[in-house]
Length: 226
Ligand code: VGL
Ligand code: ZN
Image 1 (spheres, rainbow, N blue to C red):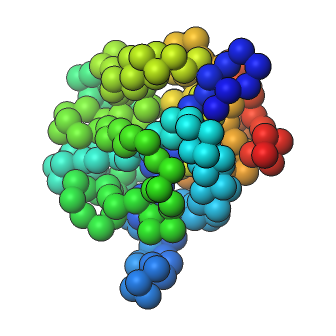
Image 2: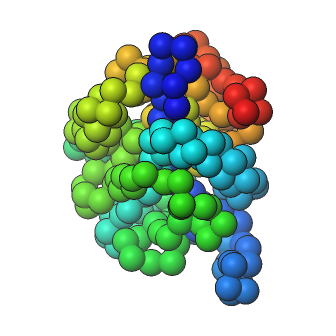
């Protein structure tokens, strides 16, 4: 989408079943709450669908990311003897990695996009966290903070210099993506009505919002642009 002097992309972060509460799919099938269900995680879908359609109608790029882990992924507590979900460990490449319940395992229902997310306007899909020994919160860099996902090159190739971000979770994937976007030189807008947080460790959502603001991220309601 073109605003004065900027060419923007919308990046929809990790709207996958494992990050969402229980719901009934379009087919009538009842899906259980996801392995890492974010409270009200599905509330972000409606504003994101609306925003994505506006972008697509203008021929602008809409990118959806997906957490896509192998079954024995290093971020799973089950991959570490004597550890439990919520523990924080230092790995060779990543200090302070939070251990999670297994989630978004490749080719499982939990890794599928939420059925109510409209993928029609989505131009491309970026999967991350697919290497067994490396987690990835940010859409731009894996958790070693060095390995690129390729998104920066992709966006720059499209002449994009601004990104709108929404999705899950405010204090993890959205947060790291927003900080990386700023450091890579993008004008960065986080859509406050289109994000929800995990809230672990306690206070992490407030901390993430504060750090994003100080880093120069614009926190805006999606309605301000529609
Ligand atoms: C996420 C925890 C673990 C996220 C991904 O999408 O925010 N959080 N993996
Ligand atoms: Zn993950």
